[in-house]
Amino acid sequence: MCQKGSLIFRDYCSRIIRYEDGTHEWLRIPRHQCGNDKCRRIHRMLPDILTPFKHYNEETISGVLDGIVTPEDEDSETCPSEDTMIRWHHWFIINEFNIEGHMKSIGYRLLGFSEELLETGISLLSHMRSSMPASWLKTVMRYIYNSGNALEAFY
Image (cartoon, rainbow, N blue to C red; front, side):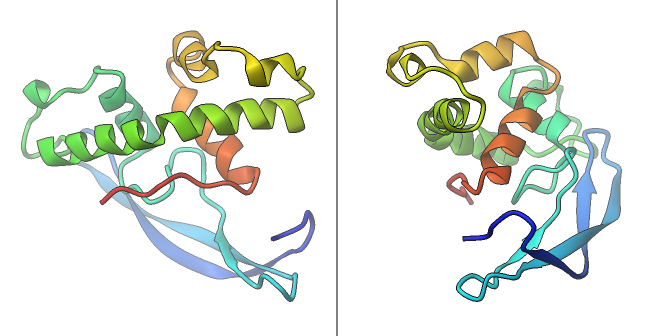
């Protein structure tokens, strides 16, 4: 596992980002390699607007998950397809329990929340979705991936 300060810049790679209005652009994403001899993995340093393993920007994905962007609104030329929206919903459903667990664990280990947090039935994910509707997905992704964890991919 990578340790703080052990990532060494390696190079850049290109990554497409698609927007709800149908436009897209290519971004140069810096890649770093772990300096730990047991790991040596390559890590992409994604900006907040990108969700790992997704081409659309975070705002579009969270809009679909929150029901703001729906297939009925879909303009086949500009919006993500209905199948893509369904995949995002399935991806979120299979990861919801893990997200909740990761958030409670991160809150306890890294943010100094009490042990009671781990035993409570309070949903941190639901609280984040209601209290920060414009940036909940971005925040969750950063906490999970930057703490060395990952979510299940869904294709």
